[in-house]
Image 1 (cartoon, rainbow, N blue to C red):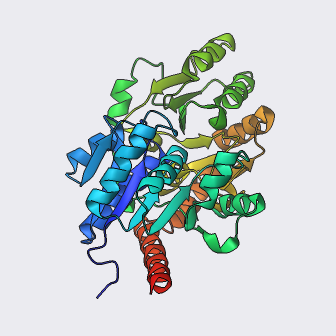
Image 2: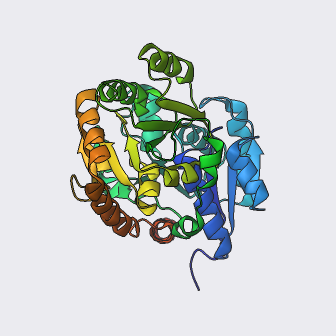
Length: 375
């Protein structure tokens, strides 16, 4: 008999967007449910994650969570933890970390776990020290994130690196021909080299450097187009920068799209220009879709991309180097094919099954420790 059998496992995600952390929370909830575990997800009310859980009829509780210090939300979460007799609480965002800590002040869960996806240093104020000392385990999505936490002063024993996973089956039926019709208004779209970036329009994704790189490229080439897929607080300022640089004919902001994978498949080259990146599941998507990849040498990205082997790495915040790499791949089809073949092979190591199996092992080990401590 598995020690986790009939043991309530709760996932907590506070985001009202659909990004890497939300995908992982959904994948884990879905996979655990399919394997017969008792699992629930507490999610932001009316969020994309709420919609996905509802559509797939997965057990969940929508809660309005307004901030990381929302005491009312923390109280509601604690009541849900008590109602479900939660034995493991897995927090998937920074705000979930805070609210999970506060909820534990009202109802103590035996095992608490935080997934850490961001590669900036934790704060050092009083509340940060409290909440960062509270979990039993941190699951870092890359070795780079693990090292940041260790350098912050956390014990190595409390941190385990588990790479984010993707559903490799979903890529087999991806079709993108319909996008030729959707973007038929663009001159010679079929013949142009298509570049794609899929990322939230935020400071850490650094689309400004990508736009400046395109501004350099158009001085030499114009037979390409860049699709930037995503939404965020910098959308208006980035569109203004594009227009100021005279890139209106070469850069299309598509906004958030449910068919982001199809857009990656539509492209010849995938680009990630982040200045901060915990790992980058969009890069794994591009690898699995056999794309030539250019990405910045930051955070956990070098754990996915090996320069000149399965992609090209460039220094972060360097538009000249990024432009040079883009031009190189635009000109060299054989290099694109070589990199994409190697990337596709490497993508097989990042299945969601591997992620779920390693996460379950962590749950099991931590609950055994809890049982030993309580006799």
